[in-house]
Image (cartoon, rainbow, N blue to C red; front, side, top):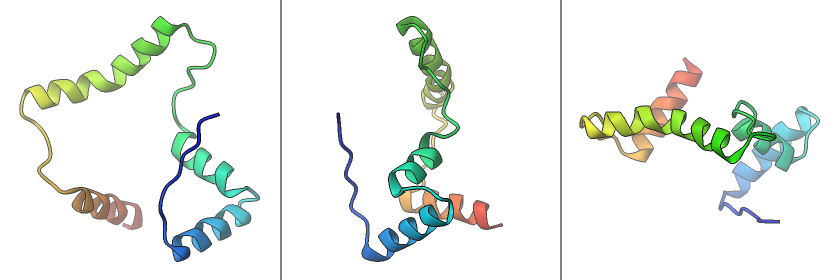
Length: 88
């Protein structure tokens, strides 16, 4: 089974562990539910159906890029903007 490792600070690890525990989940289950919880389920779909679903997600973004419509923000600025939207 593939594994995923990410570098986080000790404080981030403590926060994740506490939040997961408050939700009655392991860190793995909490992270998976937060990252993939609302992802479209492709289980049971044919390869073509799964690829069609991926195309539906990517095509609008590809078209925007072709039209030159893309962000010039840094990743840090995007993250800060997203965080501010969640807090506001």
